[in-house]
Length: 205
Image (cartoon, rainbow, N blue to C red; front, side, top):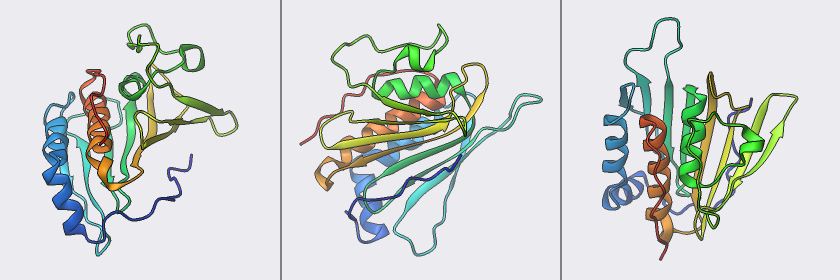
């Protein structure tokens, strides 16, 4: 499964310092570290270096994996176009499905989540548009969780009892909605790392 999306948005930030300042000013860095600190099983974050690129981010590693299970790993990157990308490796499938539902509804007939996976009851909530790819056993999806923010996902075919490799991107259409976009993405990550679902409360300006 290819783990990339082709970027199409125009840069909103021209220097890493500018991007880092905006992440700090909006509280996104603080919320991101809080999500890692609250993780269960416990994850540790490390700085992710990108040379001279205008990119900020972290890499995540599970501290103590269970016997005979792969260690959960991941990365978080924020790029000049404001895209917040979460890549996860060997993450429990039910956690991934629950985290996706933090952003929008999932069709239970399309993914068949296990009964313990909460679903969004609000009929007015945005819904994921999903497309399975049988040949390489993957699935892609698109969602507009709020105005001027786009979310895309790519994962192995969801497995509620096993692990998956997956990626999510949340992209703002312009700089004025970066805070809202990042708040949604960090909320997704918090749900992924803790298993605790929550509906986003972001507002655009």
